[in-house]
Structures are given as structure tokens and as C-alpha cells.
Amino acid sequence: MKFAYATAGVGTGGFGYGGLIEKTALKTEMVTCAIPEKYQHLHGLKIGLLADLHFDEYGDSALVHHAVKVINQEKVDLVMLAGDFVSNKAASLEPLGEILKDLRAGIGVFAVLGNHDHWMGREHAVKFLKRAGIRLLKNESEDLGDFLIAGQESAWGGRPDFSKIPSRSAVDKPIVLGWHEPDTFDWYEDDRVILQLSGHTHGGQICVPGYGPVLLPFLGKKYAAGLYQKDSGNLYVSRGLGVITIPARFCCPPEVTLLTLESRVRKA
Ligand SMILES: [Fe+2]
Image (cartoon, rainbow, N blue to C red; front, side, top):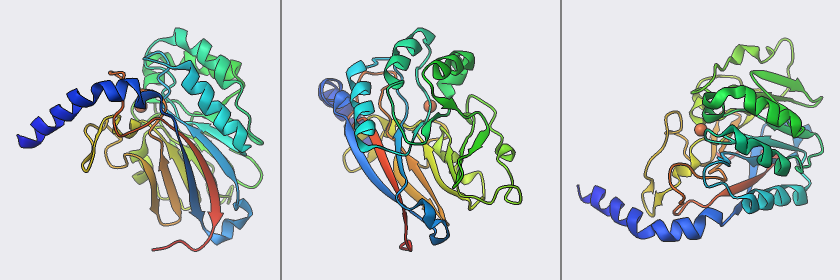
């Protein structure tokens, strides 16, 4: 009871601050991901990550432009857009595409769909991504020579199928995987997946200092935000760029992520 009261106090008192300031206070997260030495040919690979733009719901063009600029300045090798482009209004996809089409990456710009993209009718997102020159991965993978880029459908809104990723006997290469919901990190055992890129949680959107996220969504409860590791694999969960339900963030700023793969012995 005491906790519920304290949470409500932070929510009410912090609303103005979260809505007016932190919702647009883009934070660039620079992350290094340790990968097994046997994949040292990927040492130095740079990846840009954006997630959960929810552009129709309190969407902010300046914020998205800013994130695109940060990624382009870094001259990344590839970009992953980890889904939930809008919450439910397909009409907002066109202006979003006009901004995202400016993304630049040496290898390419890839995307997976989020639960909201599926619920809205995924054909809208499929069309908008194609027009913006972004490669959508729907239970698909692409062999990029040194590694595979793969993407699963949303585990909440779609029908993911991990068996569509080529078997090790067919392609024994490291895999970078996009999958909107982070808790799917526990759903597979494949040590070729050196990095899973996810969003979905918004990092909680409203966080209480010393406690953490107040509310996390289905399939986003275990891995809320940041870098996680298992065996030889990494999971990175973005706090996302947009907001949902309320136009506020608190102790949880919007994020653009720049990840660099690093071949080294990982600390236990
Ligand atoms: Fe989501």
C-alpha cells in the first residue's frame, strides 16, 4: 500500500517534467557487445538500432530526424528498426517513411514488425517500408557474406517461426537477429545468434528511481532495457523512441543505440 501511494506520487508529480522534457531528450547509447573469438571477422561491425517509434501517438518528427542524424553521422554498417512504427494509424506511416528513408548504412537498413504493426494490418507497414527502401524480415534471413541478418515476426502480434532460419548444417555463420519482443531471448538455443536486437518495453517509459520500470508489457517483463548475455549470445533491448498511452517518460529517456561488436574474452 505504501509503495502504491509512493508510485502514484511520482507519476503525478513527475508528469509535467516527463511530458515536457524527457519525452524529447534523446539519449545516444554507445554499446559494445562481446562476441566469440571464432567470429573475430565481425570485430568492429557497427549497428544502429531504433525501436518503438509509435509515430502516430504523440509522434515527434524532430526527434526522429535527430535519431536518423545520429546514426548517419556514425557511419554504421547496418541499421535495425525493431518494430512498432505506429500504434494504430496507418496514415502516419507515410510521413515517417519520408524521414526514415534518409537512413544510411554500409550494408543496409533492415526492419522487423512489432505487435502494433501486426494488429493494425501488417500490409500497411510492408508497403511503407518498401517505399522507404527498408528491407523487412518476416521470419526471413539474408546471407550477407560474413554473417546472416535475420528477423522474426512479432511474438505477440504475428507468427514467428525460428525454423525458417537456415540450419547450421546449411549455413554455419554468425547471426544478428531482430525480434520485437525481448523475452523471446529465452525461446531458442542457437549459439550462432551473437546478437538479438529488440524493443517493445519502452524501458518501462515511467521508471521510479531506485525501483525501475513501473509497468512492463507481455513478453517484455524479464528483459526491460539494455544489454543482457547468455552463453555466446547478446540481447540488446532499446528503450525506444516514442511513447504510448501517455505523452510522458520519466527516468527513461528516448534512445538511439549505436552498437559495436567486439571480439574478446567475455567476463564471467
Ligand atoms: Fe510492442
